[in-house]
Figure 1: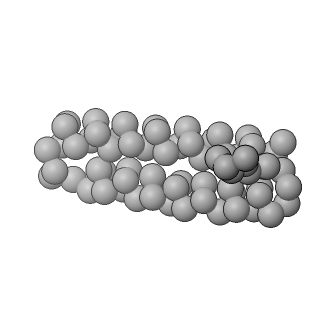
Figure 2: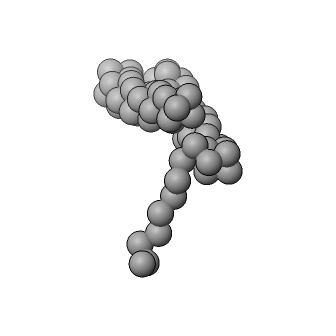
Length: 69
């Protein structure tokens, strides 16, 4: 259950960082590094999400299913 909560938190961090980057892009008009920092956080959260999904599958906390019967 903990892995699912961590995956959900990573998704929320990614979405929040994406919108934060958009706001900084519009507000600062590319004059500061806040947009780059926000998008860096999003990339790190995406990498963490991938690792969490792999760990969840390997430990059996998440059960993947295929599309073929």
